[in-house]
Amino acid sequence: MSGTHGTHGDRAGHRTYHPADGPRGDRGPGPVRADGAGVTAAALPSRRGLAPLLVPLAAGALLAVTLGVYGRVHTPTGYAVGPAGFSGPLAMKSWLTTGAFVLAGVQVLSALAMWGRIRPDAPWTGPRIAAVHRWSGRAAFLLTVPVAFHCLYALGAWFDTPRVLAHSLLGCFFYGVFTAKMLALPRPGLPGWSLPLLGGLAFTALTGLWLTSSVWFFTTIGVRL
Amino acid sequence: MNRLGPVLTLAAGAATAAVLGVLSTAPSAAPDAPGGPSEVALATSQAAPAPAEISKATGTPGAARTAETTGTAVPVPARADYAGRVRGDGGLIAVSVRGGRAVGYFCDGRSEAWLKGRVTGGTVALTGPGGASVTARLDGGKATGTLELGSREWRFTAPAVKKPSGLYRATAVVRGATVRAGWIYLPDGSRVGLTLVDGEPVDVAVPEPGENATVRGEQVGPEDVDEFIGEF
Image: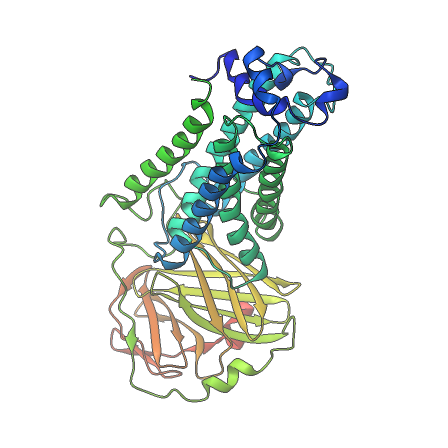
């Protein structure tokens, strides 16, 4: 799997050109670990612009639109297979989304540490923070999949109330921006702001999804499993 | 492997969705599978999610259209009746508000759910047996929201309606058996209902709005929301 330390190479390429890298030099932890001279050399011609982002952004946009169109044209089934053990689909989705939201908080903190913006005094800082970031991100993403599947398959995308409008659009947007970030990660020559922006947008979208679903459910129906 | 990590993450998500899709479309995907508690008041066969037969009556489109436009500006109506279709299911749903209290009824001719709850800030939240819930926003002369029944969940929009459309209930004791029925009438003539005798559904035709039903040879009269909400 990709859990080996070598995965840092994903980011080393783009990190090297981040403007913030200059003054900080090589003192940063995490993604600043450029894997070798080759990466550093590749970083020198830093005028490649937005080109490396085009394919990830296009793929993300395509996915977002596809999900939205599917949600509109597909006849809701009212039922979808999902994790058992909850009192109903709303509770299932609310709790899984809450789990993903908590992990998204881990995402933000670990990203801040990787980029040297915070320096947590914990034994798992340093290179391990990147693993924390990767695996908490994967877990958060996988937690959302049964939720989104139920929403799109059983219910579809609706725009009939402000909450549902926002939730439907944010849901499609979230998977688009997440896909764009995943596809952008391994690409060399990304603009330095790419990953923070895409990650920040994914976090923002997930927060909006959590507010328009879990928080709504817990406050209108009540907190129940 | 470095570069594959993020792609594998996406692939894992896609594979999970695909597995859920296959499981959900499988014929054995029973709508009421995941060990829910006592299914909503109805008993028998719900395994086949066949479209319910809702009799589309020829009658009276009547006073309905006007009702939809009334009460538009009232954020939290003190008194309102809503009835409409459940999207994708074919059943009907009715929600009635009296003061801060609210009752709801879902029926597709084979299964039903009675729900009760309150209205706060323009949102009605109802719950019923078996994990049934309805949440809806009351706005623009209609109730728009989500119905959850066991493991099933739908969206619905129910416009405001006026009598004779809306929700009726009947309760009686016929030869020692407890009869309970619920009926929903839409302005377009659609109607649906279910009659239970000692908790078991029986084949009783949905009567004309406001008229009696005949259960085991005896007349059972309907109550409107004003008459029965006190018992909820």
